[in-house]
Amino acid sequence: MWTQDNISDDQILHKAESADNTQESIKIAVLASADYAFSLFDDNVKDESMYCLFDWDFAQQTLTISITDPSKTLLAKHRVQLKLMNYDAYLSNEEDQQEQIQLWLHNHLTTSAEFLQYSLVAAMVANGDLASSVLL
Image (cartoon, rainbow, N blue to C red):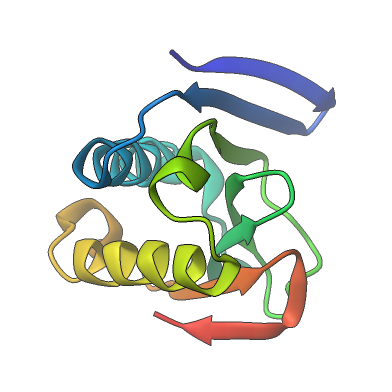
């Protein structure tokens, strides 16, 4: 399911696509991508790490999960990206999509032992706009 693209010597993008089109199956895919990102934390989280960003890109229908420094500009080694091929068949409104993913992730983070092992601030971002980040 997951493929890897070496962006540079110190940057790896892990990618997957989901053709799911029901609320429950899309939710499972989103949470599985979060869990996959959490499984990379040992190699990804460093002393300067502060944020775990979940960026929903409506135009591309992709969720990108990354670890950053306090300025949100220095990315950690691994990024995880899930493309939802049929999310718009379930929800077509941009705000509704963002809110649904945000709710799923918020609820998941409160019970994820793997995520809670690290002192990271989780935030949701819309279309790469870091100024619009919302704490989860």
